Length: 223
Image (cartoon, rainbow, N blue to C red; front, side, top):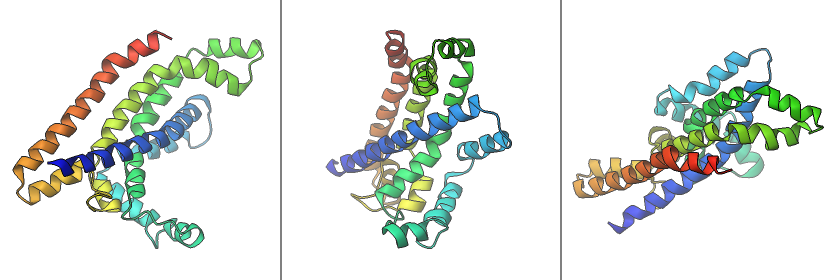
């Protein structure tokens, strides 16, 4: 059973880095759509929400078309920087980030929209710059919803299967995450190993969900 911890560590690494990416992109995009009005805003919101409803294998196919060696972007990453994301753990990070992005972006937008703009207007009157306003007023007031979204997105990224398998493949010790390890164990008839992996990932996800429910509010209320 010891090799099971290898896909667990890979899953944690992939999910952790995916959430770091979405921490920046999700919060930034959420704030942009909540605070700025521009043509096509609703269309952009719809496109950014698509990973929440599209089948993961479809997302994986899109990523291959975009990031494959001869893809729209992948060919330039390979030619200019020597970067290939297909069948790498970095590709798994991209897949997990794309799939979990709406779970950060949507709560972030809702959290920013719920902030009373009178506080922001008062801060501007006191002379705060827009950057200081964001970090000292807007973000602290919206942080509860953002944190909840980040925790849920981490759980989603941890259990990602379809898009990860499409773009990163199933390479033991390199790209094999827990979900893929379960699939392989079932295919091989290794019931005991599959049961053990399922228990491990279920416990981790339960801990994350309890953290979202109990730990986040206490931390935020203490600030």
